[in-house]
Length: 155
Image (cartoon, rainbow, N blue to C red; front, side):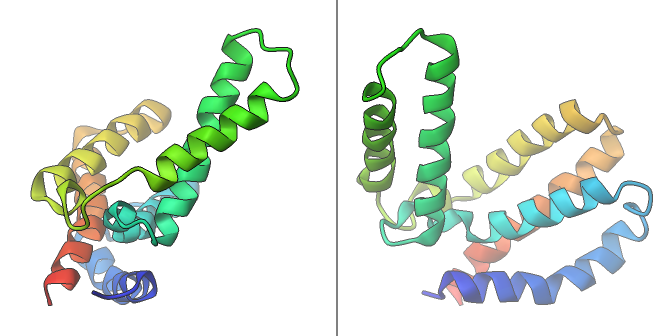
């Protein structure tokens, strides 16, 4: 099984080819969207290994999810205790970090490799509002980052 570094490097090597064939100068007008999609492309190239307890991506995603949920609680529920929020954050982080999963389970499936990029494209479309054609190109871009991880694992 390749490490997360190998997945990132492989996708960085492949991205110029994908760019030339599919994207052309699609991003010449919107550099923010370009860098955002590039970040997501690389994130998607290591995301399937979230089902491994020792993965770096699982550490970061666990931290981010615990922080988001804690902040949501902080703003939506009137909690005045100084101890409850950090304790809640720690408990959420540990649950996400050590939740038992099977490596190469659903996150390494074709279904999930379609669902996750589609979900993100819907969110990005709400933020940036672009055409259906552009959305399809962005989807293929993110999907390729994800599916290349799965292909590289098979090699």
